[in-house]
Amino acid sequence: MPDRQRIWVFDVDGTLTPHRQAMTPKFADKFSQWAEDNVFYLCTGSDAEKIEEQVDRFILDAAAGIFTCMGNVFTVNGEEIYRREFDPPEGLEKWLKKALKTSPYSVRTGNHLERRVGMWNFSIVGRNATLEQRNGYHKYDSMFREREWIASIINVDFAGKVVASVGGQISIDICQPGADKSQIMNELLARHADISVHFVGDAIRPDGNDWGLAERIREIGQPHEFTLTKSPNHTLRIIGAAL
Image (cartoon, rainbow, N blue to C red; front, top):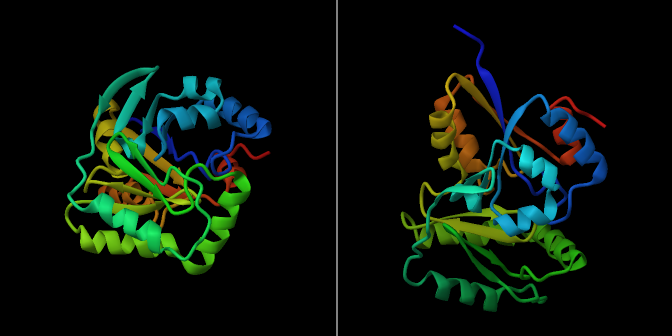
């Protein structure tokens, strides 16, 4: 049997870039050199506008494809291959407004519920937060695990209708069952023959938005695999392109 081609899949926030910040020049240089000899896809909970703010254009162009909005939008060379819409259950928006009102965290910056293709993104501090405000909430959340708690309650109250997971530094991703990052494996296996998928993400944990894809890879088994990264520099070490 011929050797399988390795296909890499990368999360973006916390994996290729600092959270909601642009890719560093040193990282972009090393990663682009590595990309010349490797096939890779990007898979993020963010929408296309945000990923274009964070990832250098030449790296986006080098990707074999880009999955945004938890895999609910898929583009290849700028052409949209598919999009899958989100049908929120009755009462979900009201529930989120109550959670926002009752959270003990006092800072509010606006844009707390962002409706994306195939999903909603919810944040107590709000997506208008500055970097300092984002870091402040992340520090609070690391201590009190508010997002994990909110996501767990959503998963109970709306069981079978939506799945909520922690994403990035400040938010929660909400989608319908099966409409998380795990869905991209079907697309990858359909597009490529005799491949091994290697996924790298920083939120591979039961409450994280990389967990669904990691679990799907675990279910399929070898030769597919996944690796938890701690930072963009760690990602470079994983792919053998250390600074």
